[in-house]
Image 1 (tube, helix red, strand yellow):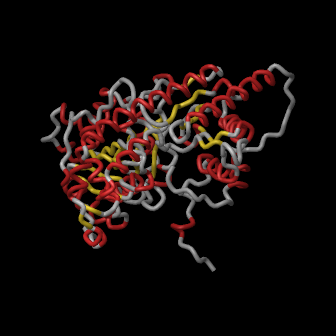
Image 2: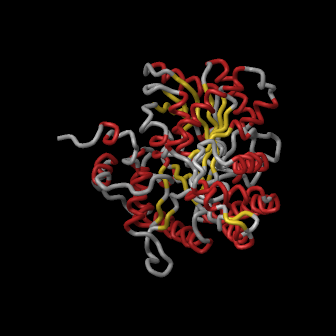
Image 3: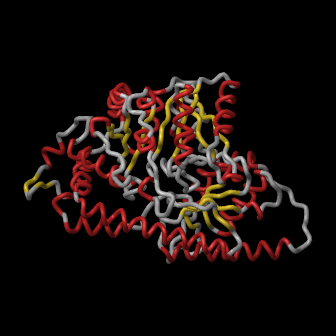
Length: 464
C-alpha cells in the first residue's frame, strides 16, 4: 500500500545531485582540528562566519535586545502574543533601511511593499506560487545554485530552463543566450513566466553589469514576463565593480510609470550579508500590489518569529553598528577571498575573477582526464575522498563546461582554510607526478551508478 503522496516521493527535489551527496559524505567524516584532523573539510557551505565578533560585541553591549526588554521593561508578553503576519513595523522599517544602506542609499525601499518570509528559500518558492502555474517555466542563468532545483520546482511544479552562459565571456548573460533559452522553453511547450537571477551570482561570485541588467529589463518588457532578482549576497561585494540592484537600474531608466515596474521583484535575506542563516529571515520586495497581497497571505506558512524580529529591529536600527559591520565584513571577505585565490594559483589552479560572495568559481579543467562530466565526477570524488574537501562540482550547478568547481571560504577559520589549500597543493603535486607515469586502463563507474548507491541515504540539511 502506498503510504506517501506523489509530491512527497517525486524526484524533483534534486537530492541525487552530487551537491547533496557530498554533504552526506561530509556528515559521515567531518573535519575537526583535534578530534578528526584527517576528516573532510566543508567547502560546500556558503555561510558567512567572518564577522561574528561584531555581532557578539553588539549583543554584549545591548543585553535588553536579546532579553525581551525595552527601556529595561519586559516585553515578553507583547512578543509572545504577536501573530500579525505583516510583521513588526519596527523590524520592517529597520530592514528596508539596511537594504538601502548596503546599496549605498542609491535606492530606497517602502516597508509596505516588503513581505517577510522564513528565509530566501521560502521567498523564492512563494514567488513561484504567486507568478506561475504548475508546468510553467522560469529561465535561470547557468551555472546556478543547485538548491534552486528544490526551492523553485519541488512543491510548485514549475520547470527551470537554463540560460547557458559560457566561460568565453566570463559567464555573462547575452541576448543570444536569453533567446536560446526562451526558444527551448517554447520547444518544450512550456509557458515562460519569468527570469530569476542571483545578483551577486551564486556560484560565480560576480555582480551583474549595468548592460546585463538593462538587457534583462528590455527582454522581460518585450516578452511580458517577470524578473526576480535574488540579491541575498548584495552586502558581500568586496571589490569593484560595485553592486547595482535591479531597482537602481529601473529607477535610472525611469521605468517607474511603465508596466515593467510591476514585473520586477527582489528577494533578500539576512543569512549571507549578516551571517544569520539560523534566524530564518527572508523577504520579498515588489512594486506589484497584487504580488505583495498574495505573498503576504502565503507568508503565514513560514513566518519569522516575533522575538527574532524584535532583536533584529533593535540591531539594524543602530546605524553605528550597521556601518561598522558592513565595512568590517567586506574587509574580511576580501582578505579571505585573496587568500584562497592566491593559494590555489600557487598550486597551478586559477579562479574566475570575482568581486563578491562567499566562494570562488575554480577552474580545474586542466586536471580532467577527458572533457566530459564523467571525468569531472571522477575528479570531484578524488577531491572529496582523497583530498578531504567537500566542494561543489560545476555539473551540480548545471554548468555546461566540465571542470569548474565552487569552493566556499567564509564558513571556516583561517587555519582551516590554510589546511584546505595545503591539501589541494599536495593533491596537485601528486597529480603532476602521476600524469608523467604510463597510464593503465581502469574501469570507470558512471555517475548514475554512483548516485544510485548514495541516494539511498537521507539528506539532513535543508538549506546550503
